[in-house]
Image (cartoon, rainbow, N blue to C red; front, side, top):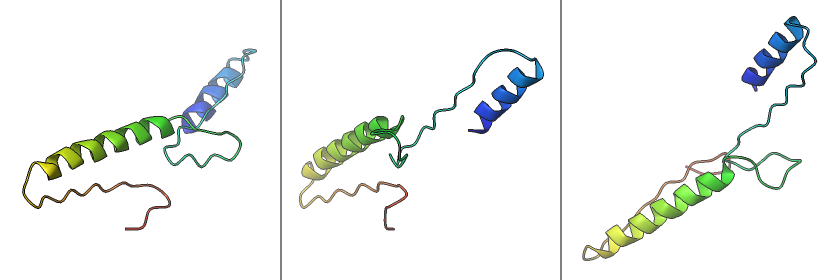
Length: 77
């Protein structure tokens, strides 16, 4: 959001009649006023790809085990 503030400050400094709106990009999908945040769907798709690739890799070895570590605000490490 710092970028939106800088843009807004510059617009104000130039005395332009323009509105600057900042939309947060959150992979955790924890923005309260919207159903899905930008970045969330991409994070889900990448997690699915990693899980699928790991599954294929684990199946290719005898007694193979696949591990995928996903990070996020609510994950437990």
